[in-house]
Image (cartoon, rainbow, N blue to C red; front, side):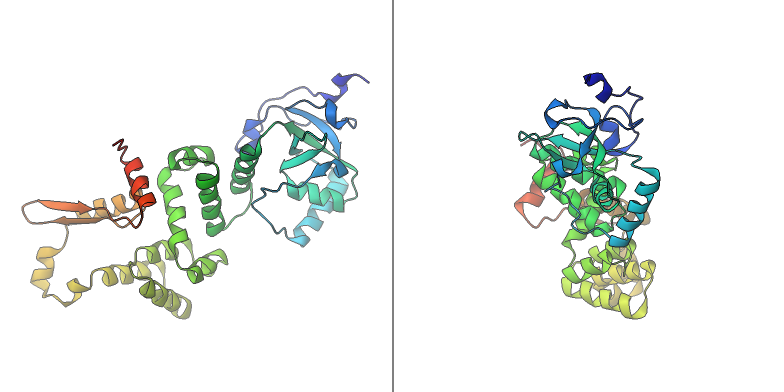
Length: 306
């Protein structure tokens, strides 16, 4: 049988996300192809029993009802978007992306599934699986933050590189990573959509963990708005201003413009920045850090080479 029957005419990229890395699109069903005969970046229909699941899959749970619905759609419409696999030395395949389609196809009773075949090492497998997961799944803020952290630590990416890979600004990536500094109880509430991302970002700005948890409990009990939590955070971080006479407080209070700079710097560096200024315009900027790793991260943002 000619190999040409297993190679389809390319139509261009799939658009955003992992598909943008892969040329071609799946036009029609192709005949089953022996594993060893498939080069990289082609579409072939592969027996399901020759495919292994992805050990780097960030998601460990898939909603059964959702899988059943997808399986029914596959029974009626077939597979619209091929999965992506890599070929192993054993002649079998391993999933890179598309595990829901793979699992639903088994539920639908399919014997084979169309797939893009790629070459990838273990690190590339993890990176592609995480990025595809971030872009295509309805992840909550904590799952996104954990995926970002894994890309930084396990794929040796810098924050700027990570932002480019996932199509986000570095400040956005930093804001998600800061969520992982919150106490576990708050992270769980954010994961379960009991509080919003706005609540969580306001809580991060409270420097004392016990006070964070106290305000968190108030959010749960009193249904506090994000603006109210932000107001509480400001008061907790600056208790001396509440007790000083109004005239003295006004003298020591930062100008509105300096406050904006302080807020922007805190967001940019991913840590609470303190900006102090006097009437003459003199002042100082303090950038705190809790570890050598965090210091190195700040130095990297500053492009400090030593």
